Image (tube, rainbow, N blue to C red; front, side, top):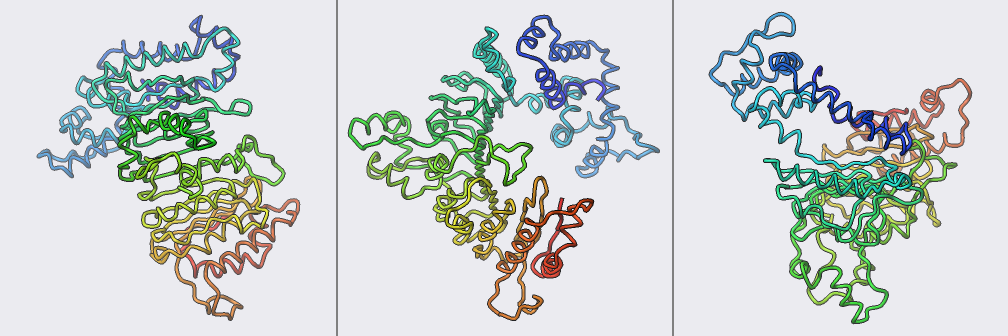
Length: 559
């Protein structure tokens, strides 16, 4: 894009990130003082482009949008606007100029086309005329993002308080929202110093449906520390918390009464569970109920819980490992042990033990926590420690009639004391489960495949049912199988005469024998891993012969 290419958000973000990472905090402060910071370059370019001649700007924009004219012509045909369909000439040009086709379309069709145009081109198209500016600005400026460098804590050594910067930026953001004629639908905090005040209270024109709070790892803990109270607006439907800490208060404390949360993603979040007093004494019970709003704004909510609204839940407690590689000799960095994960998981999946501990603090007919009911959940993506999966299965009673898609990722940190298979997650009881994905390293594939063997849902027999298995064979190498499930007849299995063998049991034997056979084999020098894994085992040939009978498989590969 000749005019606005440098203002593409992704490009600008990358340039600023590279600029700040190559300098110390003092150098960054100096560049902000003398105006040499790369951000000022973007501001200068913006002012220059705004002073361009209007005809030159329009020609440049139209020329860059020429490839999208195909969409305009298609809509011209489909909606029959009583115009003659423009004829295509030689090359990539069209007989009817863009200004005489697109600008004559009704706003409804313009919006269909606008949503198909890349963000960079939209930034240019919105300055062509006032009407396009009114149509496009609510699309390009409806998301507010607060961001600081990941190492913002180091600026405190330079007599600069990041919280003062944050206050000024939040004030500017609130002013922008107040002046906008369109709603702000998304707010993102990236490595942002949060304080115990409700920023959303000062947003008069915000219908925020998505909130993302992303932090970074600092030494052995996460920033930002989300303080209490910090309550999100009730309009939020999509919430993502990544690499941050709730400072010993609960996830429920972020959610306002009346919230109909549809998507929740927790990525390495510290704490987040509801804390109960050590003993059910009357004074402690009153204090606990007061702190959790059970006598105030949640009084009606705990007696009449709202209908379950959560559709998608993703939980990731995987450790930080260099370059994302999992290997037996690599020690994970910043991994929460199972007992720390327990505290949140037992409440999310309503384990009887957690319910029993909370019962003394509730009165008859009260339900708490609320808002995180799972009976409408259709997509669950989970990665927790092996010992924690035994708690997850308690949620199957709620999920049995709704869950259709399940992804299980192995943390690959701890091994079960009673054998790999004892810590697997059984899939029995999930009546609607249709799509299963497993991601596991070689040494825990046995535990993961035991889950597949227990998959007995009627939906498994549908032609649309899919099984997706990703096996990390070694550092960076993954053995991948994706396909649709179908019945396997005993007489199709070479060398097998028993009639009691199950398709998944045989699949388990094939994969387990295959990957474990290669785990202890040293690859000869000069031999590629892919060819070695493919050709050095008779089990691989057997599996390739049987797999087509079990799957309509799309891909079987090693990389």
